[in-house]
Image (cartoon, rainbow, N blue to C red):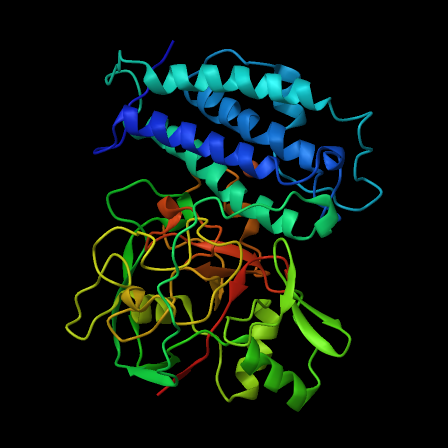
Length: 425
Ligand SMILES: [Fe+2]
């Protein structure tokens, strides 16, 4: 039997605590859909809810217990059934419902047994550093923890699409006060050319965050705030563009389709839009969506050319810095977190919606698929997916890091993503 070794600075008791918190939060999320909706497919062509409740423990067993530690399976059939979140290719190939998928109590019993095995693996004290490739197993441990957190966000996108009567409304998972009111300092800021560091330093990273390297970003100008619903409404009136996915028209008025209720469109909140919509809007303003490098320069650069770890400095994320970490279900007015602004006075670069970039998702020079999850990124290097940076209300604080890269198709409408405009100067 093999045992775990961890990257520097990571303590086992921290990982176990993180694992328990992640499982507890997932249970709260799976309690949002009413019980009778367990086999529903809130987004067509995605798997039904049951799949995800089985997938989280099965992925952890496949990745950590079996692949990294070479231990025996918990349930070999479930570990195939729930293996990967590959969506059915067409509605015909979408699987039938409850006659194919197990009963909920069976899925939950599997989850409980998997949790026991994973905790035991995370707790094992006799670390044998010599016969274990040093980083691989610790990498697998953190990979399963971050995997669960990433799914919590994508699960919330999915549950967002369910009719309100199929959900049990509840307070945010980690409510905290919104510092607001929104900053009124509109307009854009000019940022001089400079060097930015892309990629991860000395901490856990997914394969697409490596290797760390520097690039030069030419001078540019960027909006201080995300484009708001009000600005997008003006654009729609001027151009006849279609409304974004999260809006609904009723009795001649526009509404926001929130997680648990329909509310009059909050004009001062960021618009959630696709990258294609963002690109068209920016073009209308004579601008464009920023590149990944420009995002880095606006978020982490400083006039003295030192780079920060987060837009506000080098102190880790906390609820005063932005709308992330499950503090709210929905976006809040732009500029509500002045202490989260970057050195250039650019607001909400982290939280309140991922930021679309114009950079196609790809590997950095020297990219290598990660040993513990070789399919994680490379399947999406197809020119159809674009890099997003920052975070949304449903992004866990552990994923709020400079090097983290998210990616979606440019026309994917469900993601909590917004944008701002930029142009060369
Ligand atoms: Fe997954």
